[in-house]
Image 1 (cartoon, rainbow, N blue to C red):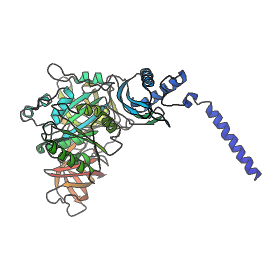
Image 2 (cartoon, one colour):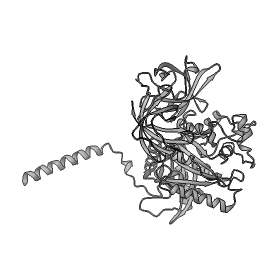
Image 3 (tube, rainbow, N blue to C red):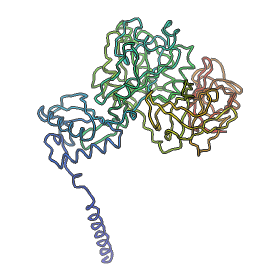
Image 4 (tube, rainbow, N blue to C red):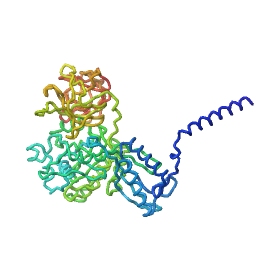
Length: 562
């Protein structure tokens, strides 16, 4: 027993010695006790610790955070007005030292006084703004383009479609009032959460000016429950892009392409207060895009019809197929809570707005300002840029726009473009990069951009092609296997059935070569082998696919490349 005790004493001595050595490298300021009044009159050591903590949080979590003042661990929440003013002054000084700005979100009463929540957002270079992409979907005449005109141009509608006229791209859209193409509209926020959109005398928006004003402060949001307890919220945006999609059934192909090819991070479902709920809800849920709902036209809808629409919407969201928790947003507190818990929970916020009177539009703007873009950690991966549109610009050359799934693309990089009709890839050079019409030198993973390609004809490119790293060995897939779920089909589906397959920016007719069942109907699941009709495509295992033909709709996942 004695030698066992001696060995144990020796081990304990080694542990004590190691801890002593480690202690020499530990910054003693990290052990400062923090509480709800730490910001009131901090000494130099406390102030240094607070600044270091804030800098590390901003660096690790996207340059932005929501910072409550007046909360502490093991204490009753709330501080006096005098302490609150002193804490705000200290927080402003700390933020300024970190090259950041603060803006008040809300103040509320608690047990021991007031608690305030401030948005802290760091400044960045003009071409390094954060972005979020929101797909705007809904039934025809739900008011999608009208709401976007009100939000982006800061003008109320006259009840007869005045604001939507500022967004339409084609003459027939202006005549019918119906969107037939995928259009992009941006809404910029500065470091204090203010909208920077300022239409000119011709009612047009200067995208370069919006991005420059918004990117004076770059940000991403974290939720800090107290100065020492941090729950990361990841990134938020500075410039949000609304992808305005068609609502009419005739343009369903365009709508599906917008939901799959433009890589939206959120979906805003628009519902007219006096209209029904359509298939766009199911499509957004099937593609696993986080969803929130905006009910419009509440100024012209009778109260009983509005309540019936809300009740039906809540019933559908709670159903086993959706499994959402509807949350009616009626105050600024509701909007902040909904935004900070939107992605991490099953909450589905519901806004009731009027484009004519402006009711509840401030809540919707606050919610959009605090939304978080999806975090993309693939910057070190092999470059992969999916093309969703092609242009031929006079004096410039061929330009492609799209979404960078992984890696990074810089000026003068050499990349491979393909696959062509034979499944081959050609080499080209990037000679120009724009993000939201603003020149930049780099596009990172998770961002969208436009690239000018050297010595490539427009006719040699199609939607669905990709740009990959020059040292990679990409393959072109003609056949693939996938698991599909039939959402709707009037009869049965069997082998040799043909339909349009949407996968990212890919849009091509494919044939079902083999089916593990004799035939499938609405609601059935099956494993099928697909073969593209015209040319091979670039696919990944795990990619989401939408199988569409007329009223037939099916969704699935690529499980194997053949």
